[in-house]
Amino acid sequence: MRTKKLIAALAFAGASMLIAAAHADNYDIDGQHAWVTFTVKHGIYGIAHGQFDAVKGTIALDKADVTKSSVKAELDVGSVHTAFDQRDSDLKGPDFFNAAEFPTISFESTKVEKVDDKTGKVTGNLTISGVSKEVTLDVKLLNEAPAPWDATLTKAAFSATGKVSTADFPMAKAAAGFGLGPDVDIVIDLEAIKK
Image (tube, rainbow, N blue to C red; front, side, top):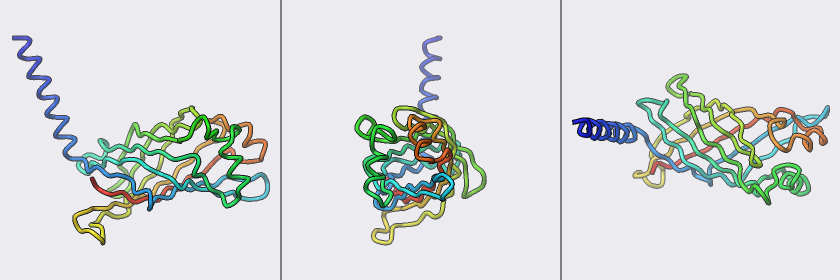
């Protein structure tokens, strides 16, 4: 009898998970329409800018219960771009992102909170140079509509902002030596295609 109850409970749990998953719209980040940019204070002088050109990942958006949504994203460290070759080389080098040993930066959400119908907060683990720290992004759903070139495809556009500290990652010493930071402001604008 106990075994039957256990099987029934497991079957119910499995069905519940499938029903929950059915509510989520799954998207692939469109790397051709994704911009991950950052700004960081440069000593007493001003603000330095940069971006990552190669972005990929997935978004599960559950409109019925936003807290069940999730995000996974990855940046190619080798695609960092600041409009100055030597600076790009320095950022890819062992003192900063160490692209040779850690070729990607990753983010995986652990919590999604609803603020209103179009905005929310996404908390997750940001991993840079093998070190993971929790960060929270303020996220806005800008639009969701059929793709203009193919009405069978749906695209969604998101914008997000957040802040990280160079002191939390292995680049801290090098950043301080160049007078960078300690805070880095991140702006993410991207489009994603519904699977």
